[in-house]
Amino acid sequence: MSADQLGKIDDVVREYVDAGRIPGAIVGIARRNKVVYMKAYGLVDDTTRRPMQMDSLFHMVSSTKPVLGVAAMMMIEEGLISPEDPVEKYIPEFKGIQVAVAEEAENKWEKNEIPDYHLEDLKRPLTIHHLLTHTAGLHTHGLGAIVSGLDRPGPTDTLASWIPRVAAGPLDFQPGTKWAYSGTVGMDVVARIIEIVTGTPFNEFVQARIFDPLDMKDTHWDVTESKLDRMPVFRNDKGPFIQSTEYYSGSLGLISTARDYMHFEQMLVNKGSIFGHRLLKPESVTLLSSNHVGNLFNETAKGGSGLGFGYAVSITMDPVVAKDGKMAGAFGWGGAAGTMSWTTPDEDLAVVYMVQRPTDLPVKIAAVVADAIED
Image (cartoon, rainbow, N blue to C red; front, side, top):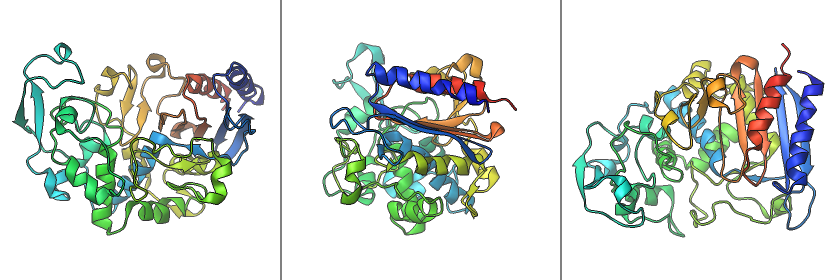
């Protein structure tokens, strides 16, 4: 990669720091199993004015979801679950779930009001595939979510106690007919299924099967007291959604470092292995990072033209049309606090961008990285 071109990352990141658009960030890039760029900028947060350190901890929010995706692929690979399995096979409370359908067009009623509606039966089973691709219609801020009356897990809830209550529905639309983001629920259902088929709490499964083999020593749902000084002042991105210390979400809540998440991305670049540990077979990584939703993701605000969606990750299908700065085949996902990471297998490339304020900076970084590739 061109050192001169990579140096331009300094310019674009410092521009955002100097303008106060972000307090600070870490950018890490690895190519062909070597770290070619890793640099910290600015402050951990602009309240304490502490300088950013390479071991600073970040609220990952929805950057948690690719970890759930890998965990699900392990279960698929081992034959414990199948993407086409009905959810009710593992969680019987989902049997008979229906779809809420408004009597009037959606644009004629306010989201905070319940219009006249009826319930209709599913035209196809709700499956694990639907949950992993956000095509399930489960708590996607539509009519079904409003009708359900559910708010969030309580202070003593676990996946085992909360997910059966979610199963009462109704859904926002017929499974497989739309792409709509289930930011806090859909992936948690998959996490609960993993608990059921393995007999292991989700957090313990992830620790033993993903974090330990990848030497992700600073990745947690709950940070120990000794590490709190490495975090921004807002301590817990579980915040308004997760109140329970025993609720380990597959959707959000992880806290990690640039180093740790680079290990995770490099494992995906390597088609499932790193440090002598194989987490997934190459074909499982391919399945995870293949477009499973046709054009459904193109038609959404979170997606757009030139993009596809796999299992818990988005995919750049056509870089010219997508205009996200990434190269064809790049896949990954971000979080509401601004973190963004992706893998480009054909270029043996992994990029990790850690920050605690969302902006359009990842698009600019991605473009610089793409231009830096020489061979």
